[in-house]
Length: 121
Figure 1 (cartoon, rainbow, N blue to C red):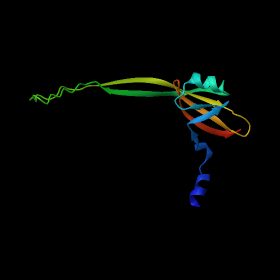
Figure 2: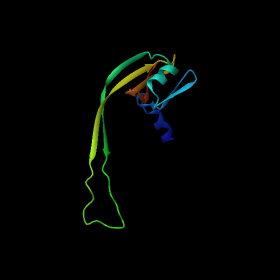
Figure 3: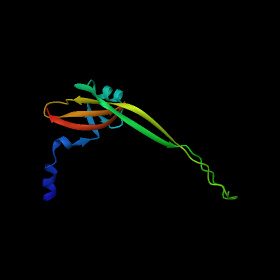
Figure 4: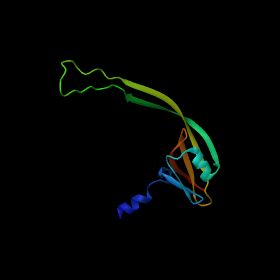
């Protein structure tokens, strides 16, 4: 019984989904902005909501392993390449009808990363 009551105590603002349905089609996290526009149409509200910095580290060093003739010298040094890029964050809002929750879609660049519920319309 306690588990049942606990589910109703979660505030709706914390609810999050990874897909929404528009005109019988699903929009999922990972979809592009153009796919969302094609399926759901123009959002009720669209705005840029800041930037995030993405850091990618890659190890490009080569390890030479020769089991036949072990070398008395240590392996050659490896090095790491770091690249940074700034990605815009966009928030789109969709009102899917009376009595439904406002859907807030968050994009990092062109990729949908989050679908959250807003207030009931």
